[in-house]
Length: 318
Ligand SMILES: Cc1cc2nc3c(=O)[nH]c(=O)nc-3n(C[C@H](O)[C@H](O)[C@H](O)COP(=O)(O)O)c2cc1C
Image (cartoon, rainbow, N blue to C red):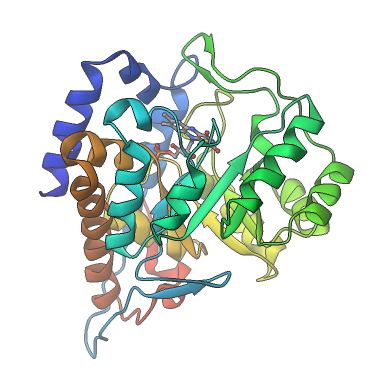
């Protein structure tokens, strides 16, 4: 199925259900409209003579992928979309050569997801009950995930419209991040970095990856889009950690812009839900493959041979 049709059908289907409101944003929903506005501020410089044959394959933190387009962390509301939803998502992403990333709640069937053979990352929230948080970290590691993600941006939980969704969270300190680092034996990624200060602290705590994200408008209102802070963060990180980005990415052009800004991986949140709702595992596969193919066309027509070769100066700001 084509991307426009998947998004149209998937969103329409989800909007008929209670879970449809999870597609919305916190409070005024400024973050959602700003995400699209900022993504649309950049155009792509064509440089096609002596063009290259572009590959989208990449190797990130020990994981070989056919595409730098991955799933952003989510669990809710996937099991409610179709029965066995997480396994369907895993199958679709495996077919696409991508990665599944679970969120809250930590899936009870995480081992079964790992057993599908898709690369798996799993997130943990900064629960007020730190013992519960460390137990969650231990349990996802013992399920055999490839990477552990920590939501540094969920210190005040999550919220959609006026409704608090995740409770019982509190911000993490640098010391706690260092303790998490000691506890995690696989690559560790801090999600929700939006400033150079947090990027510096993440590096000091030993992060392998820094996920630049405004959580798709589910935490604080009036957070910037990643592109509004990314140049300064990339300068601080200087290749010491992998950079990931999400928040409003929908098409291959968006993903290309994410790579140009310096990300190694680009996450899709809602588009994965649309794919699942529109056509199960096949729909999820189609979303990632279509976004990847659109992105590859831009790579080919800009002389970018691989994801790491997509340069910042290929973007023109409106
Ligand atoms: C329904 C829903 C559930 C989410 N759950 C989580 C979660 O548990 N943990 C997390 O770090 N992010 C969560 N997110 C945020 C996504 O990981 C991601 O940052 C965001 O959706 C990206 O924006 P996009 O949906 O515009 O692509 C969730 C987002 C949605 C829409």
